[in-house]
Structure formats: structure tokens, C-alpha cells
Image (cartoon, rainbow, N blue to C red; front, side, top):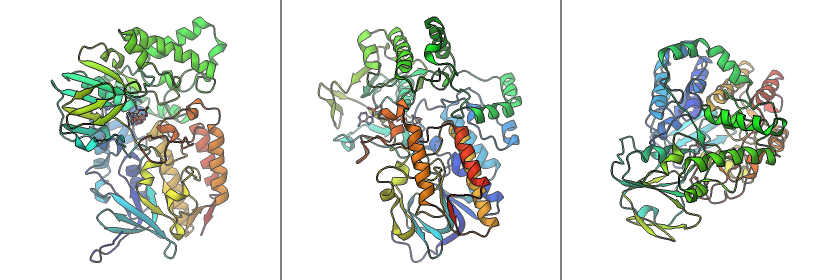
Length: 539
Ligand code: NA7
């Protein structure tokens, strides 16, 4: 990386990479510590995930109010959500509002994509370099780069040859795209594809969905929030956030303490029906406690949801194609939908099973499968992300002695509490591998507050070098791996297990996420802090 000779290195106490929900809150907290902080953001505005993912139909799958920042009562009192599950434009307006309210943008440099970050042990500082060569030096480096922020295009011949309009959902244009009367293709049927398909189907002249693997989707049951309801939500914020602190994954939903077969078949069916009729992730996160660990329990909910798909899709052959056969309900992220299955009853929508007829190439006019050739005006790639470690792989991180992070993680990530890496002193990760993800803003607030506590400790004790020890990393990494054993989701290929067919070397499953409970994660981190950050080499 050539550093421009004319531009002097800019010095800060901390550099934060990313101005999404975690980067913004970390900036707010470090300012309170009196640190000189600078945020480097690739986009032209704040928002991270909600800045980039502007695709049609993008919205929350967790309750809007449970997704808000909780750190400022004034902010909570001021902001009104219009829907129980807010759309992307509303969410981005919210994040913009937060940035304005706390005057955050003055410490953010936009249009600044980080290419490299190298640690220098002589100065105990990080040198962070942008793609344009601009360089920053800081004692601390905080990555706020998101677990789902490195989009991947499919590795299909001819992708660049298409003459119509094409776009990945996570790089959607800022200008509106009209589908009115157009021939549209969507490749990918994950949570993003499902939201996109149900929206595009409303106006497209003809929509073809190219599905490789169907997912188990469940109804979102979104609705508007009126003024009276919003006032009630505001009055209840302390209790609601307290509940989020107590549940397994910080959602409002938490597993039912009963086992699937501890109730009668009638009670079981009635419980599944109730969950299917309720808004949000209840059917996934609030189901019987064993549906994600006991294969027989999982079979029961899987059969129930398959029955729903068969009821909702008129053509039995299409219904069968939409029913997953290679994984059980909830073992991959459950896309929440609004009349998704009914889309396939519309005359303007067609499902192409690309396991039967694989895509051979993208042509200048459209898509050629082994069975036919189709012409399109627009191709939408809802093909997902190089998740969890992908955003790290795209930056040239080098620790003490020039060790590359990519090499250190060649056989899967190794972390201490999901926050630090041995050999990479003074670098802290927010929502990095091996942290509790769940309802992300809840996890972010904890993660940021914990890192802030660590940096306060460093300041108060005059420490300039903080490094995870090998023993600490080994202990945390093996703990995370052991928690993953027996979890059905870790036996299935998905972004949650780090598998991405579009990325070289990412065809084998890894344990990339902490899969214990959020309260247990916090208890461990709190205990470490209370003991003066044991397992950390401090100097
Ligand atoms: P996902 O859930 O990873 O879904 C990506 C989809 O794209 C999935 O259906 C893939 O099929 C499909 N895909 C990927 N590559 C190809 C190729 N080469 N050919 C055909 N189809 C392909 O990403 P999302 O963006 O939907 O969601 C990610 C998370 O973001 C989501 O869970 C939320 O938490 C937010 P596959 O299943 O791999 O066969």
C-alpha cells in the first residue's frame, strides 16, 4: 500500500471502521471518554446494513422498538415507529436522526473504504490505510464492519455480459427502480430474496425466481403502530429492554420451557398454530425448547410448516419445490414473509428450480439454464454475503510481526470473547466472529459498552498495549466450539456456518457464531472485566 508522501499521517486515539449501528454507538461512547476518535466509512452516509440494503421490500424481522438504541431515554421518547416491523427507509431515517441528534457526523469520514490496517509494535499503534492511500495512526483500532456486509455475486459465467440492468440487493441504487411491466429475474431465496420477490411480484410484468435451495419461511404479520400504541410502547421501554436482556438471543421471544413431546398431539398442533399466527420470530425463537436440538422435535415443526406451504400454494408441484428437503425448520435463518407463498399463485410469477435445470451462464439478453433460455430486462442478485469473516478478509489486517489475520484464521476464527485476537494487540471487534449476534442492536450495545469499559481501564491504568493471550483465545474458542455441538443449525450449510459457494475456500462448515445464550455471554464478559481483564496481557 503506497502512502502518499504529501499527506501527513493523521493521528487519533482510536479509529473505528464503519458507521453502522455499532460504529456510531462506539463513537458516542468513546467521545464520552474524551478520546480523539475518527470513523472511516465506505458509504456516503451512516447506517451500515440499512444504508447498503435498499432493495425493494427490505425491512426488519424483529420488532422495530426492540431494535432501537436503548442508551438514551430522550431518544426513545422522541422517536416514533410507524410499523411493528419497519421498512428500510424508515430505519435509515432513524439512524440518520440518531447521528444528527448526537452530532456524530463531524467525526466520520465518508467515501473512505479501508484497504489495510497494520499494527506497529514499536509505537504500539495501528496504521490504517484507505484505498486512496490516505493513512491514519491510532493507538486503538475498532472494527465495526458487520457480520453481513461483504456481498457475494454468484460465480456464474457471463455475469458481466448482461446488457440489461442488474444489481446485487446489498448494492441497490439510491434511485427508485421500476419493475412495471418488466421481465425480472431474482436469483436467491434467502431472507433477502424472499422480501424482494414478494415486493417485485406486485408490479413486474413477469417475474422468474431462480431457486437453488428453498428455505422455511414463516409469516411476519406486520401492522401499523398508532399513536396510542406507540405511547404504550414508550411507557413500557424499561420492561421491554429488561426482557430482551433475559431472553436467549435478546429477542422479545424466548424458547418455551416445554419439550415438543411433553404435550399431547392436540396441544402441540394448537401451539404451532398459535405461533404461526403471531407476528415476528416467535415460531423460531419462541417455540418448544428442543426444536433446534432434537431431530424428532424438529421433524414435528418441520412437518407442520410443510403442511402450511402445501395449503398456501395452489399448484402441488410448485409447493413441493418450495418445501426444503435438505434441512429442518429453523436450522437456517427463517425468512419472515408477507404473502410470499401466494406470490407463486400469481400468473406473472414462475419458479425455476435450478437444482433440476442449473444456470449455465448469464447471457447478454438474460439467463440460460440447462433447460431453456430466458430474456430479462432486470436481473436481481439476492445471493447473500461472505458472512461473519468475509468483511475481515476484505481488509488486509496485519498484527504484530506482520501476521495476516486471514492466515491466523485460515482454519476458522480464533478469538477471545469474540472481541480480540492473539497477535493483534489494541484491536477490538464489534459483532465479530464468536460473539452473541441475535437481536443485533441489543448485542451491539453490550459489546460497545464492554469495549468502552476496557478502554477506560487502559486509560485509568496508563496501559498502551492490550493483547489477548493464547490461553484466553484457546479457552474461548474451544468453549464456542463446544457450545455448537448438538445444535442442528451447525449441521447445515448456510451463512451461519460460514459456507459460501461463491467464495474460494469457504465450502466447509466452521463454528463462526457463539451459540450459547446472550445472558451467559454477558456473564462471562462481566466476570472477566470484574477480575481486571484476566486472560488479557496488559502493558
Ligand atoms: P442468504 O441467506 O445467504 O441467501 C442467499 C441466497 O442466494 C440463497 O438462496 C442461495 O442459495 C442463493 N445463491 C447464492 N449463490 C448462488 C448461486 N451461485 N446460484 C444460485 N443461487 C445462489 O443471504 P440473504 O441476503 O438472503 O440473507 C443473509 C442474512 O442477511 C439474512 O439471514 C438476514 O439475517 C440478513 P443456497 O441456499 O446457497 O443454495
